Image (cartoon, rainbow, N blue to C red; front, side, top):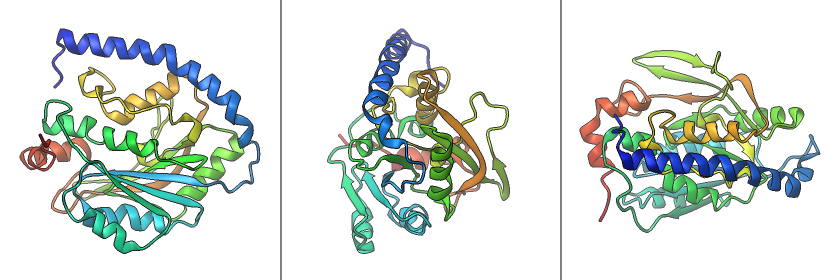
Length: 278
């Protein structure tokens, strides 16, 4: 659990006001420059899909990469950013021999936050994800984590939904498995209704919204993606929710559940796996 030290409160307070003051202004400027490019609801634009990953080469290919390459919507690029991977991730990606895939491995992986299993869950993908956002070329952006699987029509249905509603950001339901039981998570009752980060699709002029490496310091919305989605909402990004399963989130091999629970149950292993390099 986060310790509400003076440093944490000060940093979170500063970031909160910085986001509140700057991001709505940047959104207005981005709309003024780019929104006119999104008026055609029948356009089939390039979608930039990105994956932050660290030393999960086999699982990355088996789940995330294969499900992206199997999409019914084919005008996409796939950006894979390794967080200074030391396994065979790069070799496995190159073996795919697909011109739509771009791989970049960050050269360093230094200290970023107190290295607990919980903090790795909260902020682990932030640096790689932010670098991926700097690499996008498409008009739309989607994210998938290395251990998740999209439905074959993921990009197609979300893009159509966004275009027809003139939304800047859309998300949807996902099917999750915990302890052998599957259930659909569709954000009912939430305000606003926003699905998991693996279901997001949004316009690329929103890429100035970056993930917050200090999200672990907060006492609420501490996960990197919930911190970001809260800022989308507060900046008044036009968004809506699609009640359709577009992602399957399943336990990793050898684990029984997903999310923070899985990290806590294998805490020693996760701390060792994600150990920072000096």
